[in-house]
Length: 238
Image (tube, rainbow, N blue to C red; front, side, top):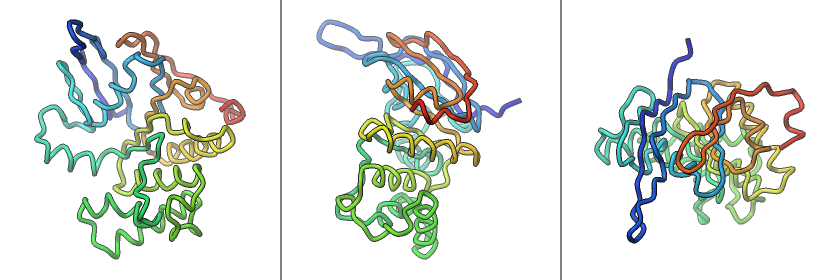
């Protein structure tokens, strides 16, 4: 029996737009097991980004319950939630979100500073993570000195800095050319094989095809939830 890492129950998210009430999420329920590699897909306005923000504790549902790694994050104070995110969830964004004046090494160290990791340990861990993502020779470079793919690798290393069980990616290949996107997807595959649970939000069905499970959303609801068999040549299709 797979250990459940994410549990969503009857999630509702309402927005007021003038006189109209928009259901960004309309009674969404699902579970994601520890070690899964999953994509949440759908067109613009389907609710997938809202779902990602709620999983990541960046937004709160109007109603319903979200439990991550056994913790009901809707019951947490802002301070506890920030600490929980730092320890439990790594974020990878389309726009990388690196600090331009910091080196690659300093960017990866940043969440460990917030997490209270001692300087020597965080320096060694950041260096090891940059080696892990193939950037051992670029640790002293700033983001403007790195290609888009290299910046995304730094962002992935930073997301892994707190040793989180969950990695969330919001259109992580959206700003990359197709070849670099393939390389980033291959890195996600390697990380998942090492036990990291990965959930990607994407509108790109080729990216979704590289994962093992696809949750499809439309109009704030889940319309399909499929586990797919992946071939060894899946990267040719990304």
